Length: 210
Image (cartoon, helix red, strand yellow):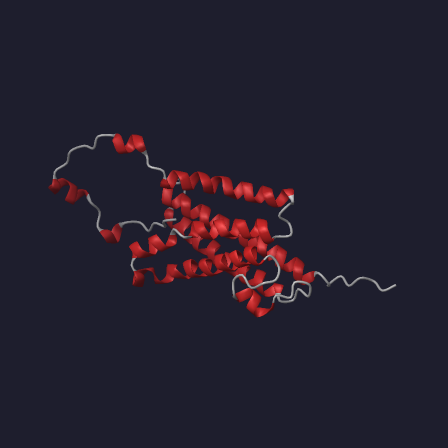
């Protein structure tokens, strides 16, 4: 009797591991971006530290996404081929959910690299574009649940819950209007005083909007 080849599923296992790693890294990057946008960590962690951590997690997530896709090429059962990995909704296995994962990967690449050209495209435009990171996260969740072989496992759902709950909370905190603050009367200041108190653009700390 021929012994089973221990490497027969190596590519599939590598793709699973890198896919879960990519999801965790992207989730943490989105979470830190929201924490900076809501200023919930103001006074606790220095902004430059958060910016660097946000950036490095995003880049590490892109690397993990690339590994997740490349290792699928060695999966003899799935056998997606380059077109199946590059063209959304063309893979034979769960075309809808794998296609959404590919779209999420392209968006993650676009948003991750846009950080380095934000001065050319303008900070305001870059911040508006950066809000799509929430879409990347949402598509990643759908892809994981729809195409992932571990979608029914309790440990994977625990990861989704642990990352999803704070992301949902910070998203609501970021986008829901603060009614008491909006209704509070604003102190009267003269235009001269307001102009003098406003910091120069070059001295304002860097913020990331998600």
